[in-house]
Amino acid sequence: MQDSGTKPSGRFTDIPPSIFNDVIGPVMRGPSSSHNAAALRMGKIARALMNNNTTKVLVAFDTSGSLPFTHTSQGSDMGLAGGLLGFEADDSRLLNYEEELDRKGITVQYHTGDFGDPHPNTYRITIENNEETHSMIALSTGGGMLEVIDIDGAEVFIQGDLFVTLVYCDGDAKPILEKLGSVHPPPSLKSGRHGPFVEILSHEAPGADEIDALAAMTGVQYIRNLPPVLPIHRPRHLKIPFQTLTEMAALAREKHLNLDALALLYESQRGDIPEKAVLQRMVEIVRVLRSSIKIGLAGTDHEDRILGYQSGAYLEASRSKRLMDLGVMNRVVPYVASLMEVKSALGVIVAAPTAGSCGCLPGAVLGAADTMEMDDEAAARAMLAAGMIGVLITRLSTFAAEVGGCQVECGAGSAMAAAGLATLMEGTTDVALCAASMALQNSLGMICDPVASRVEVPCLGKNTMAAANAMTCANMAMAGFDPVIPLEEVIHTMDRVGRSLPRELKCTALGGLSITPAAKALERDLNHRGQHHRTPEVGTTEDGGQRP
Image (cartoon, rainbow, N blue to C red; front, side, top):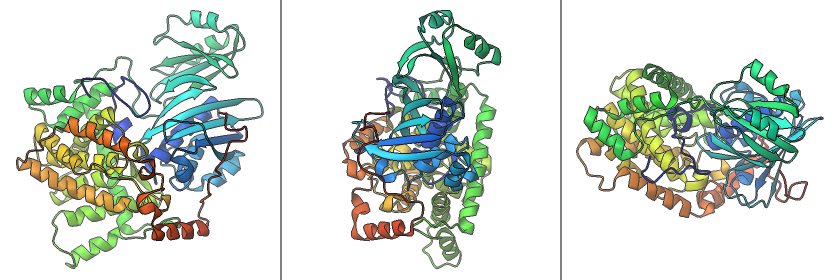
């Protein structure tokens, strides 16, 4: 939300973000939303493109991107496989994805090449069976979001919130396009590698009669239906109650609306769903988070993990009075750690706004809510307020650490948590915006340097630091501290800082703590254990790096 337009991670779009699509969610298994959840959604689209009949998949990554170094350890392989198999992001079968692929007779190969891809999270996917081959280029843009930018060599722009019908033609497709002239939005003609196809976007699922009518047209070879992969579909008449942060703040003052009420209004209009349904959806997310915290505190284990079970030990040490009395922080720290441990054990968590920062916001809000003896609805309202800050951030910047470093994950999560905590304390919208601004200011320049390419160290410490920062800034804002720099300007600054960070410090495991002697020794030890870790093959694809 800015006066000068919007700037997503991949390319220009005027589609406003959704709290449940772009900010809080998906409900997923760890370890990384940019890798696991986004790749799973790509796999679902690829599965539909092949009419649920795939036998061979070739995935290629640019050598200059982040994925050659992280696709296995951070879950891209697992996610993509899950999507190809039709699984949801929290499906327990993801844990045995290799066996599931074998059972379905699907082989997946990974290669790298010099493609010159400008986005560090670019997937070049070729999918085959005995009868046909298709290709797809897709971007993971942060927090599980994606953009499909190429199908069969033709430029497209699919974000996963609409129904997409592809009509493949065996000759001239213009007559088909003319017959579809009354369809809205207007269909477009694409010149693909295997011939022309017509792309039809729709807000509702096409009926069987519509598909039959399309199939009966002269020149139609076959049809592919690509259903939405995001929870909130784009409504036919999309509207939002405010376009900019300035407009939002003005509406808050005019109507005396706190940030949670603004979030309810925004998401209700954005998704064309009742405010009651918005609140209920967030309450359900809060209950998923409570379950995850309970599981984490009880103890988790996973072979391919750096850190062991620590959250319960902290809670026990706090209860036995062996720690300094930090008040609510002695509840928040184990909550944050428990969520991070569940994520690292490939358990179910909620990307908020990402899986790498899944502990900060929920741990802070639920820890504070429990200390204050507040119910799930109060916690959900605080999470919605946090989600509204996330909408501002993703509209002006990104949640992808590969683009902006950890400041756009844990830093963003801290700003969101600060606003949520201020709302929990019944602070006004202006107070919540001040809290978010201060928290984000304190996070500028935070690098992403995962040790051994695992989302654990220093991620756990950064999540707890982000939660502590959020709590402090929420209290400072409630006490009337002046943030000096407005939130919108801080977000723009964060984006500029992130894009100026060197590639080595943006989730590539090529700099920072990732390359210390201790980290490299740990990485060698983990790889030696052979816990599903394959070193990527650096070179070109089988066809010389030209496709898909």
